[in-house]
Each structure stands twice: as structure tokens, then as C-alpha cells.
Amino acid sequence: MLLYAKAVETYKTRRRLSAVNKPRILFAGGGSEQDSRPLDEIFASWVGSKGRLLYLPVALVDEPSMQAGIRWVKSVFEPLGLTQIDAWTDLSGKTAQDLQSYDGVYIGGGNTFHLLNQVRVHHLDRALVDFIVAGLPCLRRQRRGHFTQP
Picture 1 (cartoon, rainbow, N blue to C red):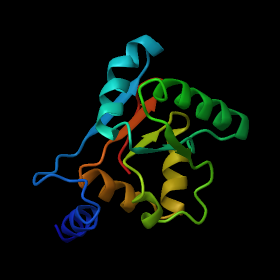
Picture 2: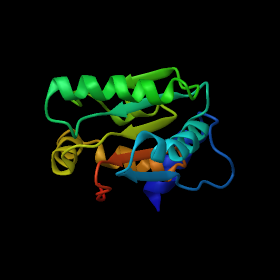
Picture 3: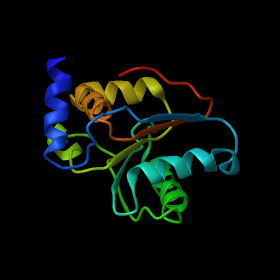
């Protein structure tokens, strides 16, 4: 409960929360771009057209795949009004405070175990939980719809 209270207080100072915070998480997997379009639209509306989106392609294990993922995320969300899209391809030196400057997090597909290892090794697992608990949107996409907890 203390961590929840800390997360809420942190994000209230950013004036992004209503009185009641509900985690907003979407899990997507399988299907085509057309199949995922309704979820992408919901997620984009949660982030807001003036919002900053963070894309985490770290479940992918090679740089060319990460760059292709970045191009794909931009091609999906820019037409939906999200133009401030950043990607963290390396979590080294990233902190919970860095994460607080974003209005939504998109966690890309790939090797789930590699993703979990990267997030834990760089101590961002708790920061992501706090982000979600504070009511900020998160979308996790996986080809086969697999997901796990941080």
C-alpha cells in the first residue's frame, strides 16, 4: 500500500490523474494490423494526442529488429495522433524518474524472458508497476499473446 501511495503522490504532482486511478493495461497478441487496430486506438486515446509514448523494444535481441520495431510503432501510432514517440533500446542508466516523463508505455513483443531479465537487471520492474498502478496506460504486444508479470 505504501508503494501505491507513493506512486499516486508522484503522479498527482504531474496533474495527470483523476481522483480514482484504475490501471489501464492492454495485452495484444496474434492477428494482423487490422485485428489490433481497435486496441491501438484505445491505447492512443488513453495516451492522448499531446502525450509522450515510450516504446520498449528490449524483448527483441538484435538491433535491426529493434529498429524495425521502432519504425512499425511509429507507423501505427503517428496516424492515430501520437507524434512524441521515444524508444529505449538500451535500459542502461534509465531510472524510474526517466519513466515519469511519459504518458504511456508500449512494450513490444519478442523474447519475454529476455525482456524480464532486462527490466529486472536495470531495476525498472518496480517503476513499471508503479507507472501502471498510478493509472497510466501500458500496452504489451506479443505475437502469440504470451505475457507474464514483472
